[in-house]
Length: 275
Length: 305
Image (tube, rainbow over all chains, first blue to last red; front, top):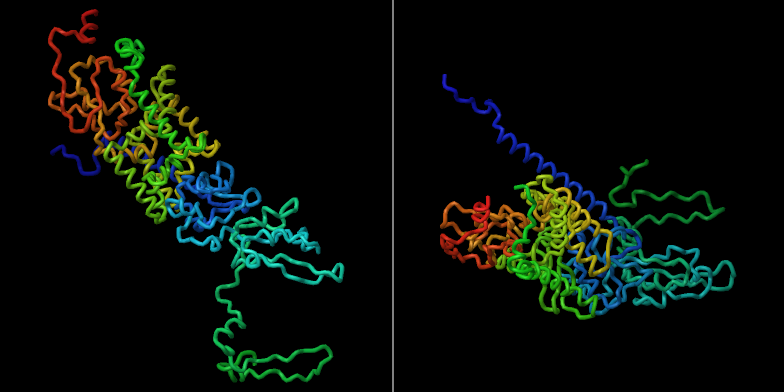
């Protein structure tokens, strides 16, 4: 009988065995390193609330695939607003950020930081600084705000580069003195660029108005919500003709109010629910 | 045979300190020069290059971007602006023309750190270490691209010691520079030329583009070689030397074409016999053998024995 080895069952080739073992080792090592870097990167993706990205920054996840951490935006900033994150600062290491309470964005007309960005991590489509949305101002310290106490501070309102659009003063009755007015600073997210001038200049020990990342500050109604009065304006007439006008129930009013007829609503009629 | 021999000592004795270190000095000057292009701005207000090695703008006209950093961005899913693409194209073109790993020896700021580690290692006479395969870096390159893909971020830039060092020096020192210490200790105590020669994925990348570069080292005077082994002792990628130096066939090319060669020129410096020289890729000249009665160092040794 010939001494030919059966394919696959012969004594293991030590060379091949070593090569395979080595390969497995390196593959495992690679996977380990990839996992470690992946974990570290995931950890670094959370942006602390007080750190803001420069104008035009892509959404945080896209930003981290785009920013090469070169610092050209930092060099371009004439006001030393931007910094590159160090280990422990919060934002991913080497990425640019600013803290409004320290140095806010001065909203340069030519947006040099965006122009300098080589990769588009700061979106070059942003050409009008008023369209920047670095964050959103929010009067988080309502009870501390001097204006809310009935005094006239107005500083945040007056320093706002988008005055009377991003922050307006809403007049309400001062219930405490019963004869004065409260000038409440109200932020309008559709105009607020998140530059942070208001937060920087808030005269309080701890700023009452603060610029927060959009995702923290911004309220959003459901996508499917329709505001009746707006839809009505758009259409030019009532959306549902002959809509039920529920009677006003007045205290001590007549008890024999006729319930509205469901048959008035198109599509319901006699097969309506609840009958 | 076990007498420790410090590479370069003989060259220094025969040729003088300057000749035995000229390419090392040239490299240090170049490394410092590249750094000063960036540092002259923050230090003296003279702005030449802005940014870092990851991406920069020189004199407001020349954009340069590290192609590997950009590649990670692409893998992570970002379509970059043309400025970065042009910058990466220029850098890639330049290294394809000159030689990819010329970056490692002549530009990279980690090189002085690992060179220092190698020197300390020689001084401490640490012989053997963890025998990591040089190809490990290719796995590392793969690993960082996988990490970029999975996370959708330029993940390696969180720990990349090269850009960390530049950023730290140009924008303010950072704790991230502790990685430098790790690399130093790794090179001294764990693996000889561990980081640059085995692990660094940036070096792996530039190795892959090190196939066409014109600047090469030639063992043109290999007939004069007396097997003192100084070049092997000093070379950070010592496996690149043999094919050009110790050839079986006299007709073999004297050019060191291995993609791992960083063209650092230390072999040229330390060789007392002046075997090596910088030349271009297509220079196949080999010096004629010395006259038979000329004694080489090896024959001197043999005679003495």
